[in-house]
Image (cartoon, rainbow, N blue to C red):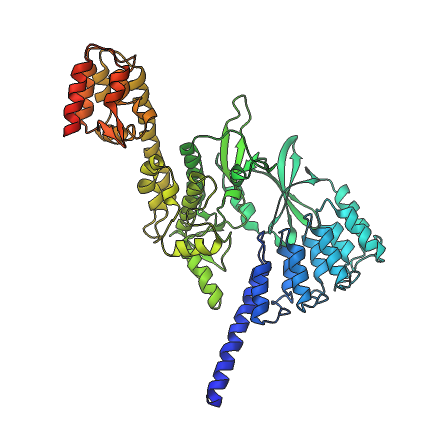
Length: 570
């Protein structure tokens, strides 16, 4: 190998390591609930610099303490520090890892994480560039129910609630200032409904009604969400009731829900599992499609469609109708006249992607960030994923792991489609799901098209139910005329469906043949009509004739049997 080749090889290795260091910071910079210890271990084995920093001076430890909400946080902190991550590193504003914890982390991990950082020698009483210490951050920003326990740890180390920052405010002042500020929105700090990278959601009250209160740090407020919510007035979109702010936070009073869609499929022993009523699937799909079509009609795109952002709401009144509503417009973005929107980096959750967005993600991991044009059709694809998720009772259409889901979306392979009930697939797969999951966004069905297609499917389902009732209960002399009133296409499709199992069979030809209600003289004419329409005598191993012999007692029984025997031979 020549010296030039050696230099070239070393340059390639350096670039590869730099790429891995960037990946590490991106991984730690996302709100993540998965166990990342294995991922971090892989980076360590690659030999990268764990003390690499982003443009804000934050290293992997800072970012983990800010964003990582998994119970495994303490394991990852320990892993990073044991592998020579500088526990006392500060960002450009002078914050160390314990400041990030106290400012951003409100989960049950807070106390243990603080203790581990102290155990590994962090300067727990350090102050930042603006004179703030850990107690200032706890009382100014943190919503943890363990605030008192955290305070005891720091006061034992010598911090004082009366110590002032550079603005002349103490931790005690921050606490009292929040309590005394007159606000129309009230919330219970201990009643946390949800945590995320965009803020904390509490249960609260506004104007005498119970609401969900979303609290977002002012510096992280994106006016898009408020603007989007104010634009969107629709029965299937969560209502924004009021907005106000104090010195540090913006507060949004939102319609209170009983659960989110992902809570339907939690394990039975999970206290957060939703066991309440739900509308029929066609109603759920229609509500979601209608809400999304309205979002798109206002030149907006949701960009963060996933089950936890679809809320289940009980309407007031005696019937307490269950309504599905879109929520969380923190990623909503305006689109131009062609329905396009620009992406400055991929947003949203990593398993709920349209292929064109996933392609952007993959490119970003391999190259410098570049502008990307997406379309409102990205939302439609992910809505198709949500429909599949409901059909599969909580499974993803494209696989069970993030890696497999990404591979299968890229390869146009919805591996779990075959798990969907056969009868449901007949109505939804070709007419709707395949159109929503079209790989090319230009060929993909629009949200308006989804609404129309669902109306068509619903009409078929209504007619199917009407036919079942007609066969099972109508014994009038004009039964044949009533049958002929239905469209021919419905006859062929629904007739075939009804022979798929014994229960359906006894509501179709067999009921007409042998049911107690349909013993009129026109019975044989109805059977002839079924045969003309191509409804089989034997389907999926089910034969109408033995059921006829067992149950039918009419005088036409032998003639009907002869007809069925002849039809079976064709």
